Image (cartoon, rainbow, N blue to C red):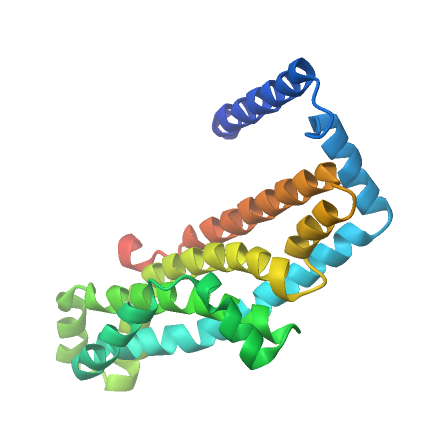
Amino acid sequence: MDKLHRIWPPALLIALLIGTWHVAVVQSASLIFPSPAQVLAGTRELAQNGTLWQHIGASLMRVTVGFLLAVLVAVPTGLWMGRVEGVYRTLNPLFQILRPISPIAWIPLAILWFGVGDVAPVFLIFLAAVFPMIVQTANGVHTIEQRYLHAAMNFGVSRRKLFHQVIVPAALPDIVVGMRIGLGVAWLVVVAAEMIVRNSGLGYLIIDARNAGNRYDLVLAGMVIIGIIGLLLDAAMRRLEGLDSVRWRYGR
């Protein structure tokens, strides 16, 4: 019952939006803007001919590679910055300069450096995800309660054990928050990058549908699919945040 109470408000809101959309299209007698039924038919068309799954697979592949590379770089760097004050003072200004630059602004340079293959979108995804994770991880280390560290040192815990058994578990909630933020931005960026630098993926699907005879039903189908996948990715990260092993700092 509790689960039902959590689900019905957003479900009702979505139903109201779809109903409003349908009424607006019918009342305006639009010949260009598609109705919800037409978008559903377009989605079915893409699924049946296999195009949909190819584009989804291409986008998810690029996000997975770019995001994992960002995790491999960001988490160790953030832990290092959080633990060593000199490293933080040296690297933080650089990251704060680079972080506000939209990954989309890097598209011309990505094309120049890597061409129009898969490397350019992966590079843009990496840039989108790496900085939020670095900042959040370093912040997680900085906010560790000193009593944990003092207690461990009073028991003669070595630096290696202190790092692995106290610092990393205590910073883990912030690390996962950074991963969630980074993944959300990465999914946004891959769609934009595919509109420009590739011939596959959901971003390319939208542009191609627009250029190939104004298929706005497929344009909106691509947009809806992007939103649904983004919601599922965020839900997966929320589940990860809720694990007891991740919430070490708060549960003990």
